[in-house]
Every structure is written in C-alpha cells, then in structure tokens.
Image 1 (cartoon, rainbow, N blue to C red):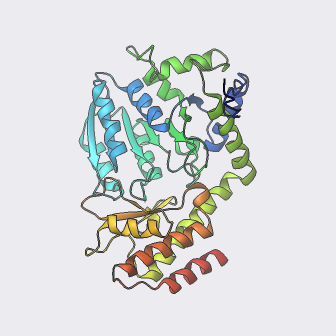
Image 2 (image 1 turned 90 degrees about the horizontal axis):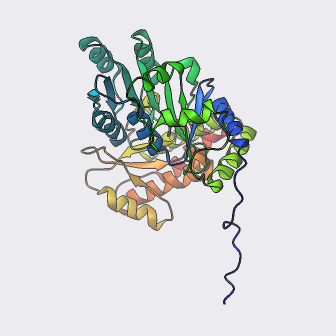
Image 3 (image 1 turned 45 degrees about the horizontal axis):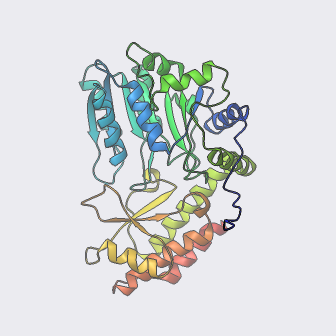
Length: 364
C-alpha cells in the first residue's frame, strides 16, 4: 500500500465547544452589539437567506431596497415565504436616494421589515445607512442590514444605529475565512421571528439556532467544520491586534488613494466619495473599449480587475482594495494596470501622475 503522506489539513481536531461562545462575544465586540450573535456554518449568503426565511410568512409586510442582485434575492426569499414585499430599486450601479425611501414609507401601509445592503461590492457604492435606519426607527420597523461588504471597511455600530438584524462574513475587509458567517439579532427581531409559524427543523431556521443560545452556547448543532472556526479565531486575533478603527482607516486610505490616482489618470469618478464604498472602487470604461478587453489587458500585467455586477447599462470595472489588498502596493498596482490597459487601447493615461497622486495620499 502506497504511503499517501500526511497533510495537516486532514484529521483536524474538533473545535473546542466552550470556545464558540467566546467567538460570538468577540464578533459582538467588532459589531459593537450586545444583541445575540449567531454563528452560521456557511458563507454569508446562506446567513442572509436564513434571515429572510425566518422572517417571511403571510401577513408580513416588507420594504426591500435593491442596489445589487443581493437585494433582489432577499426580496425573492421573503416573497417565497408569503410576505408582501415592495421593492425600491436604485438606478443601476447607484446608491439608493434617501428621498425614495422616505416616500415609500410615507405612501404605503405599515411596514414590518426594511432590508438593505450597506456597502455593495458589486458596484462600489455605499447606501445612506444611518439616514435610512433613522426613518425605520421612527416608524418602529425591524431592520435587516447586509453588512458583509462593509464590516471592517466602514464604521458599523449596530447598537448605536439600532440595527435589528446585521449579517456579516469575515472574508472581505476582515480578511478571514469565507465558510462561516454571523448574525446579530435584537430582541425586537426575535419577537418577529418567533411569532406563530416560525420555520423550524431547517438549516435556515434562526429559531432553531436560538436553541444554541438558550442552551448555554456550547457545541453548535450539526457537525461543525473545525478548520473554519480555527481560521476565524486566527482572523479575530489579527483583527483585534490591528484594531477595528485602524482597519477602517486603512480601507478609507486605500479608497482615497485609489480615487486620487484615477483622477490623476484622467478617469472620471463613478460616484462621489461620500457615496462610495471603501472596499471597491468602480470606474467607467470608455465607450470605445470593451470592459472584457480592459480586464484582459490588466490580467496580462498580473492585476485582477473585475466587471461591475448588476450595473448594466453602465459599463463599470472594479478595482479591489479589500482586506489585505487595502495597502499601498495593491492600490498602486490596480491603478497603474488600469492606466496601462487604457494606453494599450489607444486612450491617454498619465500613469506617472497617477502614481505620484497615490504616493502623495499615502504620505499625508
């Protein structure tokens, strides 16, 4: 029999049951939340669907803000459970306007749930979260916030903002594993979730996951994947060592330097800084150049540039400065590669000026 060798990724010991509660408390600290923290053994889109499934039922009324495909999915999940859903759809690749939210809230009957994405990795925009939450609080509406692409890149104080359900993953700005996510759930949200008809005996049931909290937060149900939890623990060690304020500041600096470089390059801004995400910067592609051609040209230089998702007819590419990429060298590489791709297609691009603008931003 051949010797297959030993791989340390095989036979990983079980994650200690008593440390799940510690992980949850550490995530609560990151979110500045004293609400219940649930650990979901899957990528964050599963946690988002679990939130929708656990809320949705006939008689529930929801206002769903769509600024990317993720918001569209959330509305579909709510409808599938029997909820009455009104969608507010922003212009492609743009944040929602607060006036549109206020108008929808004032025009319709009472809304039980309002859902939105905070920062969009699909288009590099930032929705006006504090203003929207203030409107919801004034009307006693339970709020659901997809903060997967904003936690660590933007300030997120769950208790101060009054977010009832916040869904996060650690794989973006926090630089952690993708296979485990978390949900912060307020008492008001639990009251709505646990009404008669709450889904049970389902991997998507938050009511079932509450049993973990009520039972003393020991071993998670099912068979947890220990690698993911060891990885999350390591990521939290690094996050706490750097400090959330510093992580947010690092992303803000990367975004500011990217915008400065693009401006010096001669590339127009897609949205103003106040409406832009700190994790991804979207930039329009000249009409005479196909986004795929620009992406391929950047790829030949060893830099990954991606197309905007759900932004048609706007023709956008995204420069990624998320997590470990929120650093000078990556920002410089992104902008230089974008400029070089423009040049190869015959468009003017002042790469030297862009490089100096980025360097100057980091020297400030």
